[in-house]
Length: 243
Image 1 (cartoon, helix red, strand yellow):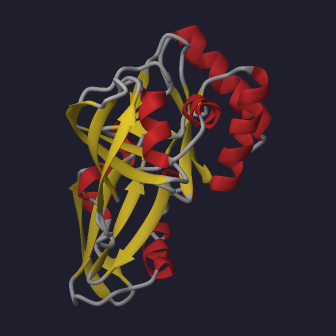
Image 2: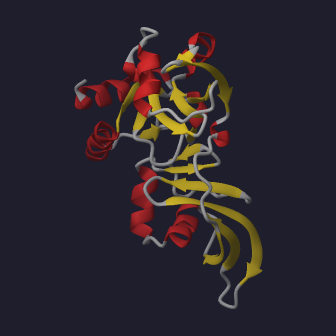
Image 3: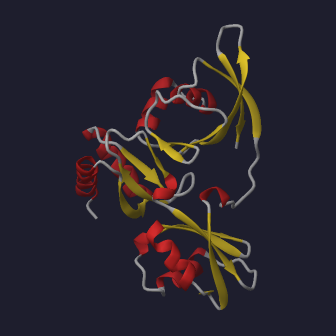
């Protein structure tokens, strides 16, 4: 895949037809190259992998009129349950999937857990995989569709904090939650690296409605839970939870 040609063609199709267009799953390296090309050419792209810091993602080209795009329009999650309850490797699950005769680029990250694994795939393959996955290594395996929000690999620590912002604009809240400068926040949002309640947010000026969950690729996840009133300096105080 030539990333430059792919990005240009994808963006052209998105603008002509007025709707988002997606690549198959690509590596994080190819995705970062695509974002670099898009920045130079003033194009709008989002990266969708089903989870924060996904290693394999789909590149999404958005028409200029689009405000955001739903993650589930591009990525679906499955839970693969190993019948013997053991933990199998990424390689074991990938081998079982490839034995079905599917292409590698319809599969995103595979996250092994005790007794099974979470799998990300393109929406059009989800039903086929649920119906046809029946084994991993030497044991049986059952696939079930789950929501992206239900994918849990490890319980992380949380921290409750209070932050002050000048407004509920996305860039202002991102600056406060992730300790970024205004310029950094603008750049990251415009690169499509911010998700608000599971949707890619490309507009720094978007006004957030609380409570909302924010995931900033490469920086973490947080929830802006509620307003606590104004500070002595007239800023909005927000109760937030960092994950």
